[in-house]
Image 1 (spheres, protein in one colour):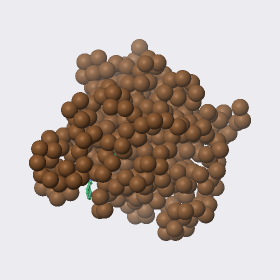
Image 2 (tube, rainbow, N blue to C red):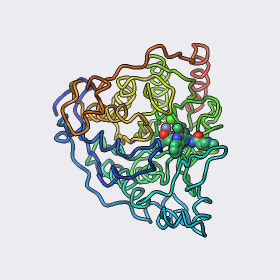
Image 3 (tube, rainbow, N blue to C red):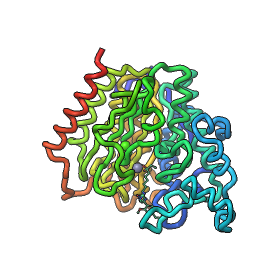
Image 4 (spheres, protein in one colour):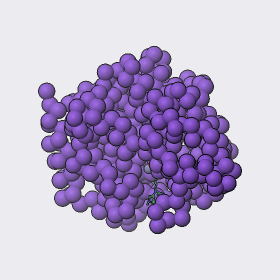
Length: 391
Ligand code: TV1
Ligand code: CA
Ligand code: ZN
């Protein structure tokens, strides 16, 4: 096969469903599913669709979703409607019990609204991750991509943090049918709590999350460096908490040695990577300072191990940044250099503020609260935990 700067080109499968683009969390909600359509439009305008096979799939079924989720919760996701919820009866009560439509404490915003087309949305983004996992299982793809997936907070019987169905857990279950050990890596700025909890006592799944851990930052109280997993999963949960303002250099100073050690001690047969774009500089929710190149360097690094790789989306609340990031990471997956100049396409006005360039500049004058002391301490605790898995 043709070579490229990061070694041989890979067989890449890509999932995109335009039924997801129109999903509306509410007019001032920060989660905007249209960013996936923006990423797709960029990917198409760069001509990258010709370098990938397109995954065409049916939406996930209730049975497939129930491989992880509670049946009562799945029933609610299927039945709840904005109108039924607004009526204020039994359905409203049931929905709130599953954290759908409930107000956050001391807060008037609803993280997980009972949106129109909710069940269809869940089935489509979970169906994409499942099809992507199956393409890796069959060997049809070496890398499979679903930017509409990566909803890492959803729990067995409740919605959390804009996530209803945990497509990641469903996809990992599928991978476990073929691969003995699966590594999960989460570079979203939030802790990957739903995935960590699902596999907290599993020896076959190792979870690693890099995330912001500052006062009141969601999900509060999760993802401490001391949280390492339990039972057979002990030392197979890795948490790398960060203060605000991490830059590319500092991030990689942690990411590379930690992931190299994880690969050495765990020896996975497949890798799932949640590529949340809210760790990028200038995000509406995150306070980190990564460039697109720095974010994508994490993908490049995991890709260099030449294992079956599932790439998923996640957070990302400054839509032009996240769309540019996922387009660039698609090119990295393929192994193709793409020009910094954004081609003329339907969303190009969104990139005016960044001079129609993919690689927008990181924010200047951001304080990096990750002191050498803090980073060295975190690194040494994580590395010491990992030595427990040495053969
Ligand atoms: C509606 C309208 C909802 C405006 C939510 C930011 C909004 C947030 C909104 C928001 C917002 C959160 C909490 C409060 C728990 C609640 C996809 C007691 C301007 C993967 C999920 C973050 C991140 C949830 C998801 C968080 C992901 N932050 N405006 N809500 N507390 N919820 O803090 O990891 O990226 O912010
Ligand atoms: Ca994370
Ligand atoms: Zn996030």
